[in-house]
Length: 196
Image (cartoon, rainbow, N blue to C red):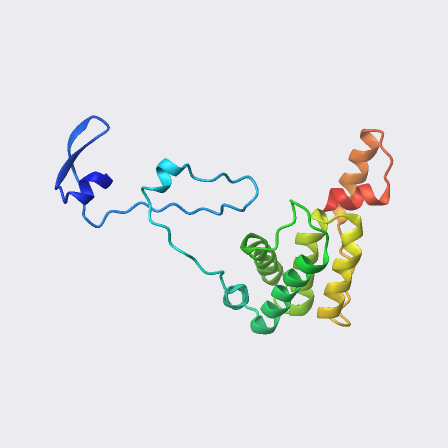
């Protein structure tokens, strides 16, 4: 494909198929995050076929603001800034773990959870809805030592905000029944992790 584009050919042979039309504005793009966990570098023989393009870090606060507005949040700008500050402070203060993520994927998860909560509770306190989304999305992945630090971060960013204890109703009934069926002990931390 690249050779046909360079020679400005109108047709070329592609994997044994002759006379394939080529469009001059055709392009192939490869998105890579070389430093990201689980990713490998592109081999040098393929790198030479592509021209690198530098990308800038997305404005998480602006993206968060727009998405929160789209879910019906009226205080979207202030809440987006709090959310970004939570992730920034977490990345600076919490321990460094491979499974901790404070990038766009984490921002998207929190915003989606906050959107679902807003849909279920249209008139609810928006600070509490975002706070619940932040906690529910992040606490399950944190180590025990980091949970205390994270709680401190969100209490500083959401002063005086107290989340009501959620009613798990039927979920709790089935969870306790399943624990008993497997002859396990209903220990508090085990139940918390199951709910998370």
